[in-house]
Length: 423
RNA sequence: GGAGAAAUGGCAGAGUGGUCGAUUGCGGCAGUCUUGAAAACUGUUGAGGGUUACACCUCCGGGGGUUCGAAUCCCUCUUUCUCCGCCA
Image (tube, rainbow, N blue to C red; front, top):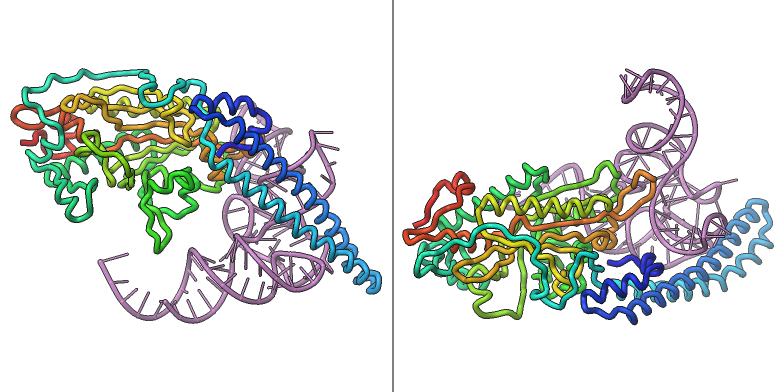
């Protein structure tokens, strides 16, 4: 959520920045400032009435103590009217505050200066690429056929017990998944991230905290009877562990990692691009989350990018890094780098990680602050990234490591899998 | 699921209708001492809104009520603890 105090002072900056997302925010921001003005003026009037009322009360107390009941009762009558008007003003103030809140909820984060202008994924800017694209054998298969051929994943079985987008991993396929999760967690913890196991369902307040609610409600599975949401990413429970906290500056940075399944309804897209592991309703992901001092958040973002790079380098997968353009940037993000692995058999890039700095956007909703060295309470910066999302990494491994005899296992994963070849 | 107790500032923990936005301890910050650090001592320190700055307003788990006045009394919800039941 954007900070209204900052909008008040830098309206033009916000209009300019949001234009990068293709949003003309001129009139919305005008409404924001009007609602803010309305809230403040009705609050000021209310405060005045309450101040008067408070001073009467104090006086009445004193009068009773000195036994001047007559005078006290006279004053009591004066407070009746004040009460009535305070009630009215309070309603006015709450209505304006609510309106302001709704307007602010509707506005996405403002992009960082580095974010290129653009409308969709075609305008994303490639900033890095590494790894050789392998030459595959004749008749190389896409991963969904490899999965079937070597009996690694059963998509139909998942359809039977749940529905499309809920695959069943089997045998070496299941073991490879487990190996990847352990490998990722080990990489993250040895880079200093603390491992967490968190709930896979969260309450409404957590959904609001990280920005999934209210604008992306339809993307989460909702358990109505208990009013809980299945998490779309570990980001939600992990970041919300710190909701409402006031940290000391010496506690920063806080770095967490966690493996969770992720649940996404993602309605609306069909065809070859969602075949196999390309898009799922349930998938596994290892996430890294950082809570940072504002001065350090962009250095931290670079550090996270370097960390993910190292993992992909070890896996020897060909990948590239994109800086997302304004039109493709997530609602809550100020700057995002997407990592994509090249799927040779499909001849296309698959997104496997997204690393973002949210600056104060989440922290403002979360009321997650720290006491800085100057004694002032400030909002922290939150960041997170996938390190990594499993299905497409698995797809990339299966496709890029295939030979005419079977599938090789990347060297670093062999100790985690207990085998080096799938045939 | 049933019965009882509780929820207070970053943390711990006093406070049962009127100088209580809250005693105290720890922690934090600043200083003295020290080559430096620790210890000790001194000072300072809740959050939010509002103001150029003050003033002022709100906040003692959430919501509602009683009262001129509520951390304090009443209702309700949530959570935690103890006991019982059930159970991986």
